[in-house]
Image (cartoon, rainbow, N blue to C red; front, side):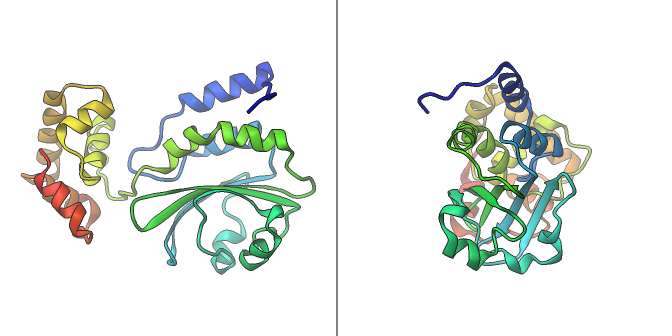
Length: 233
């Protein structure tokens, strides 16, 4: 991004955004994250959405006023895009998805969330177009957005689990071994094992697959993921 200069205010906002932790078990960022995105790339509305491929909305949130007509008329949204889509540059696709209804300009950034869903941030302006600098700032935010949008949905995590236990269980559900989880969380494998012991006790189960099913409320349907969870350790 040659030529991109951030003011002291923007640098402060970026540092604050980078310090925000993803919500354990949720692919939708907290409201403060959406507000910071809307300040760094000035927008009239910022949405975060999770949708199954060709299926229903699974989760969404927005600022300033919630999800607006996203909730009232979800049919306006086509399959969510992976990568960045500047809708005003693709008028035909925008019309098909009604992506510019009530907006002068809109940009979406999406990431895969597991094998069957996409999580996406959408920003909207009612009267003005996004400039090259706006798009460069949004591109700069890519890794931060990915961190907040790639957490797999686990809506039944008990409140009794600690943040560390939730993170370990999320990685277990993704099919990762104890050593892989330890590397990702920068802890010892023995610490991962201890967290899992606490998870099993709190959930009333005695193995990895039972813990995942207890949280999901349903068995895993992906055979490869089942194999990964059952054989990891």
